[in-house]
Image 1 (tube, rainbow, N blue to C red):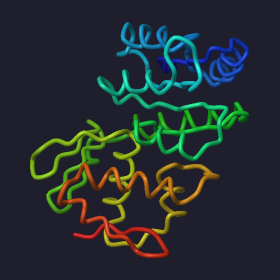
Image 2 (image 1 turned 180 degrees about the vertical axis):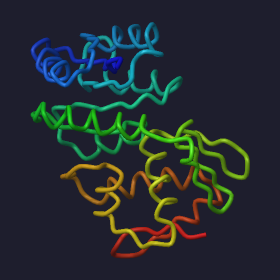
Image 3 (image 1 turned 60 degrees about the horizontal axis):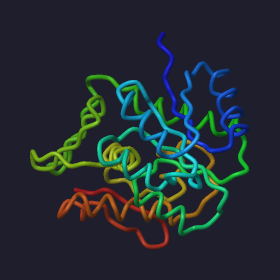
Image 4 (image 1 turned 90 degrees about the vertical axis):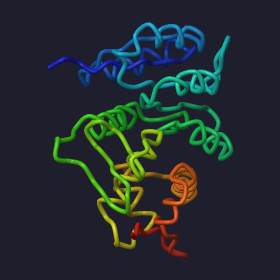
Length: 225
């Protein structure tokens, strides 16, 4: 089986080596970039090969936010953001730019690799029967494609996962904790604002159909046609 390729971007060589060693041990192939500009150059030279990007925020020549903007203009490749800052505003900015995971330093390399595996497992494992339909919304889990009334809409990886989870559980009241467990698939140590931020962006992209995601005050959400 071909090894999946991960691009690790960090200006600290020790950090790149630490992350690389754990990824290689888990059978991933790793490419490295020491700054943002190098990361963009490598990505666009190899974008058909790269399955995921692990991206530091604070870097010379081009910071992680700008790298994310450049990549997101052309690709939905999953992005995990690393930062030394534990600032909620940074985290929200990351989600606004389409970051799929957000990890503050210091972190456990084993947890990082587990999150990489979980993201790639969810993005790659699907069967041809996995097409969900409700209220004019069609989610094709294999093609990673969403149409609303036959018009395709662009969603980030995490928005796609969230909409898929809602359709799979339509009519069921879902707590924020249950959504975190179902969509993020690990013990998340953030708070409910992570969910609320993603739901807000998803609703806006769905237009009028965004009203199908009902807010249950004090609990969470329910997708109801």
